[in-house]
Amino acid sequence: MDESTIDFYNENAEKLADSYETADMKVVHGLLLRFLPERESVLEIGCGSGRDAAFLISRGYDVTAVEAAPKMIEVAQRLHPELAGRIIQATLPFREPDRLLCRHFGAVVCIGTIIHVPDHDIFEFASQLRDLVAPEGILFLSGSMRNLPSQTSRDDNGRLIIERVPEEIQLLFERLGFQLLTRVQNDDALGRPIKWYSLVMQKVGQGNSRSVDEIEAIISRDRKDATYKLALLRALCDKDSEIVEIRKNLCLFHFVLN
Image (cartoon, rainbow, N blue to C red):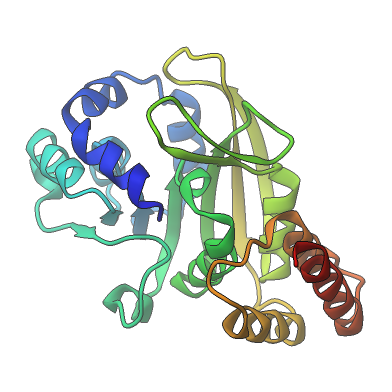
């Protein structure tokens, strides 16, 4: 996860928590209660003020939460004492060997987190989510749609914001073994001029292992600062393409980059 973004959340933890705690989350919380298996284990990635983790605990879920900013963790545990011992400080994607990567959860929830994941980390992040979700488990993702089509930018506070087309994210996770249960668009919970989408997906398989293994190998060989953006996602998401077509697309994209 981008260091400047983490710094922003550390420096503004109190003010942000005050705002988050007043947000109208009826739509998102309604979706969670509708699709998450009852009383299952849930991993929330990017828990912020602890608002959503605390809500799920109140409804009987066994919640583990992850947050990159230590100050946000302090505030979350003060506002929601029931989260004591449940929040793990970690950046995204998780670094090996992280003990979380050995666990499986009935549901993984990422509310507004994926917009802060850099392009060069998005496939590793997606692959880790695939491994964290138990078979037949649920993945809940939400992202903003203020500046679509996809682009990378920083807001006035220096936070990295990458707003990806929801269809691209949906197809990426379908390629990794998930099926879409529903996609919902809603207004911003804080009244800002932003639209949000929520994807609810269920893990039904291990995806196309041939293409996944091929692209993982390419990523591991490439320089760490390579930017894959939509060319990689489209290669991943083309369900009818063969490996040769994926390799061709990636090679063409790197030729353009270099």
